[in-house]
Length: 301
Image 1 (cartoon, one colour):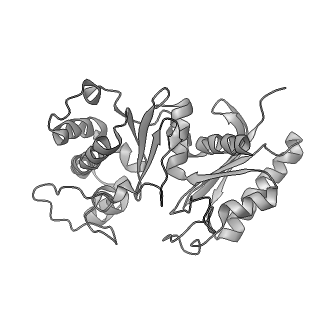
Image 2 (cartoon, helix red, strand yellow):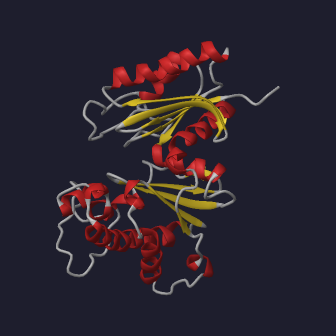
Image 3 (cartoon, one colour):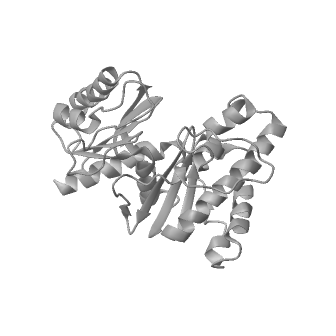
């Protein structure tokens, strides 16, 4: 018998990506549609899997959901599988995993979008063969997924390392854009912070502004990564998200990180070119992570 197919949903704040397959080189079907209200959007996701079941002669063995958040991940909590208090209008309190599982009648795996991306990069991408690693996405906000010995780190909540305190760059008077902490990592380096700082989205910056943005983001992200390195000790760090595509950011970030570490603990791995890297799976990491979540949900059944 051939290996079963799994379903995946990358539930983003802007769009949903649904697919059925076994991995990046074996995708049987996929669809992308905008994120509107919960009722409409989740119904469209369920309809995709039902329609494909008629074409493929079966529903997937399980479906994995990699969702924007914050989300409730404690399985013993009455709101497990819900999106909790989110700035996305209309989505706070949405039972996304429960709805999909009830409608399709198959096991459901559920985690954050960044944790899904981390799992995919560990299975097929830039963290393949790494025992412990971190995935940081720098987009509108900053999200971090941490994997240790193949398991995603969870606690009372998923890691919120985008909100760690960072040292202020000298002469930087920007107050920060985080509504909770002001000048935390997210408040200083995320896309929303750049838009507030420059008065326009990062995609509209001119060449000089892009260089300035890259220097600032590199410095603040490096300070945030120092906290990760000293607390989690990852073998590799993957940097994704739209802001990570700023020209020249990655070499600046690697140099800033070494400066931030200050020679401690002076490991050659921290100086290696493959310690801080871009995602190998590109923008597909989140959706492909849903396949890993689905496989694990089917195995746990």
